[in-house]
Image (cartoon, rainbow over all chains, first blue to last red; front, side, top):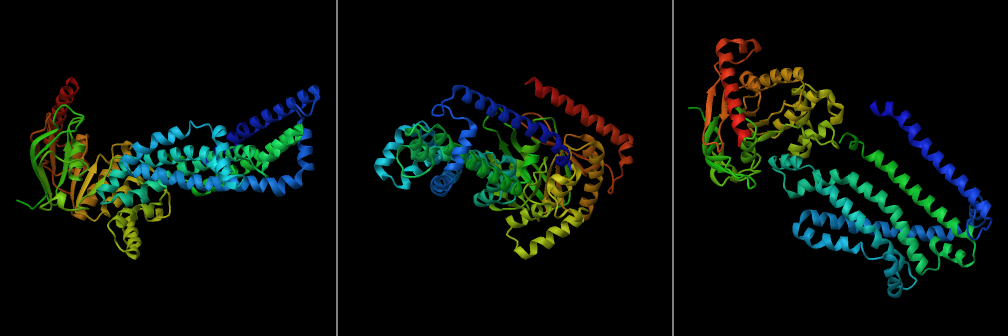
Length: 258
Length: 258
């Protein structure tokens, strides 16, 4: 009941304001772009949408699936790897001390600089791009899930121990359910990052994909053509994040009270 | 002499971060079926008694017996009720009650009937499917108590279970707990800082004094069971209450001077 009462008020200020800001920015963009009047430097939003429509076939049928495939694969591997490492570091202090600094250090590797190496290793195959996506995704995923597991309340853990629970039972019956919301935050955060990783990979060496397409349009000085796949990429990422949020709301109803 | 349920034998204990010992060569025992209230100033080690019984801390010297056996040789010998109810928010009330049964490895098909029966005993049979957040503070403590009983042990350790509740709820839960104790015939050790609560519920009061605590003062409560609240008005009980409070105040002052 409480939630229902809150919703209208939160909805009005929570939705209308950002919509107004976005609308304002788009209008400003349109005005500035019309004033500059050089579509190869700054196309208008209308031009971008037009281009998106004209290019719909290659964009939706070839390049979007290619990028989403890389993103999906990168995301799955990052989540599996991140969750595995997080569980391991949670279970063993030694593993935590040994791995945590390495994981943090992995984040200082500039993906843009190292990705060409992946192209050398894996050629133009999907794996060079997937690796670039994993490299930037798995760090926040690991840390977020690890924090989730660690934040399980000590009192609850002790309570379970007094009831005779072993390490395994504490893990499955307390830590895992407790970390489910963290897992979802990790997924929500990972999706856009993973898309960026995939696009970077495609920029550096690919034969398809939205990143690759945007780069090709740049060589043709087609400003609207550069923007169109980017718009599509963001829209796809937002859609997936939204779907994950819906799933999370459906599954984790208890988190609100904490 | 009645049979002993819990026995501290020459326990010496110190928290690693403390400069002083908490208990030194401390011995006392609680007989089967007693309702013992432990009172003492803040930081005197009331809750530490439970942590030692539950083996969340290990004593430097001495041993603790429950039912005549060293606690290090057994599991699941106590039912612990913490100050916060610690119900798992992702489990329904019914599933929360089944947790101790899962830990005790009770066969699956027996768990639900046992838990349902216990929920009926605490008068909340309609709440089986509810989430803990849908219950009031008093109801949650009753569920928590039911869960403690489902640990199946004859020794109940209650750590200030009503201290976070409002006055009226606290009073009615005290009366409810008194009834439960009379009908269950279990041994209860009840930690509280509320002298009146101790006098109303307990058959004997243990006072922890000094730092380190070397012995407990044992004060039988000269009232028959079942109790009525008016009995607390008797002059001798009033006098006992004043004496206990004055003693605790002195302790408290000494504690903050150090």
